[in-house]
Structure formats: structure tokens, C-alpha cells
Image (cartoon, rainbow, N blue to C red; front, top):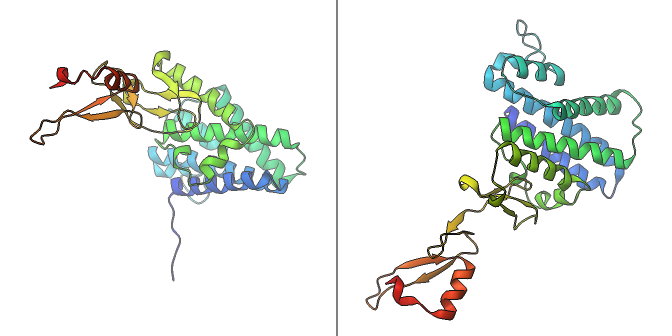
Length: 260
């Protein structure tokens, strides 16, 4: 008999993918929102447990002397702070409280929220989840979403705005020079970080290496860099790579001799 076996992290990512799928469906059929939120809260709780497991596996259980039931959201947060030394700010605590309150309301009480409130809470929780996974589990969740969810998720109301705010905070916290933040060619947001060869968008997770122009020494996206072969008549190749501006200048002025 075949068995399904998943790690905590795999489980968390699976919950998240299903949550996003339900959120996309909810744009057409609103009853899917409650499932989207429940799955997202489950993804958050499971990723917190995974980070506890990194410290010591026994910590994922509420009673470490009788390891049967695993920790809930608040016990997970408490242990992560006190034992794993994970730091949470006020916005993180607010997100966890939102997650806990929403799940309790959906499961134990009458669920009565406007669609605008649901969406606002949902995108806040997505922001917390993706940032926590990136910062504490070294997982770029958005970049690894399967197609077409990676495209659809960016269409959710306020979602990009939430990610933008977190991206800006991350850029500030990492003291990244403003000149080293470009517009992302994928999501068109000013959040593509090139400093220290990070070459990643802090909003959508898009990654593309940058290459140094051999004429002006400025960086250019790999997809935009232009290669020119200055090889000789014997067929020996001698490739040089240029940014768009230098390539256009090369084509206009044709200063080939200086590169031989």
C-alpha cells in the first residue's frame, strides 16, 4: 500500500499553494475565501513548527514529556522567541493574532466578514508567511509557486501593495543603497535588488543575474546584455559583453579596433 509522507516544510508549502488556489477561485466564487484563510493559517502554523524543529524536534510538541500533540500558534511563537531566539516585531504579532482570530471565527463561530476585510487580512497573512519563510527558513515561496498561480497571485487586491511594503522594509533593514534597487522586469515594481549580486526582486521573487558591461563597467540584466565576437580571421572567438547603451554606441561608431 502506497503512503503519502511529507515533511513539515513540504506540508506548509502545500497548504500555502492550496490556499492561493482557493483565493484565486474566490475571486469568482466568494465561499472559497474561508478555505483560503484556513489553509493559509495552517501553512503559517506549520512553518513555525518547522523553524522550531530546526532548533530541536521535541519543541514542536506542546508537552515535551509526553510528545503527542503539537504546539499551537501562540506556543510556537513563545518558544521561537525564548528558545530559538527568533525576533518578531509588532506587525508580526498582529499578523499572528489575525490568523488565530480568523481561524477561531471560521471554525467555532459564525463567519461574518466583508469581502474587503477578508482580502485585507488574507494579503497581510501572505506577507507574513512569505517573509518568515524567506528570513527564517531560507525559502523563497513566491518565486517557487507553480504556474499559473505565480501569475494569478499578483492580481489579488492589495496583495502586491502588502508585498511592496514588506520589500521596502526589508531593503531598509538590509541597508541597501537606493541606487542598487531597480525596477523589476517581471512585476514592474521598484524592488529588484542588485547589491552584492542578490539580483532578486523583493516583491515577486524574480531572479536574474546581472552582468558587468565590458565598456562602461555598469551592470545590466543578463537578458539585456549584448554579446559581440571580436574573434580573428582564424576563427578564434573573443566575446565581449555590453550594456544596451554601449552596444548601440558600438554599432554606431564601430570602434572595433580597440578591442583586439
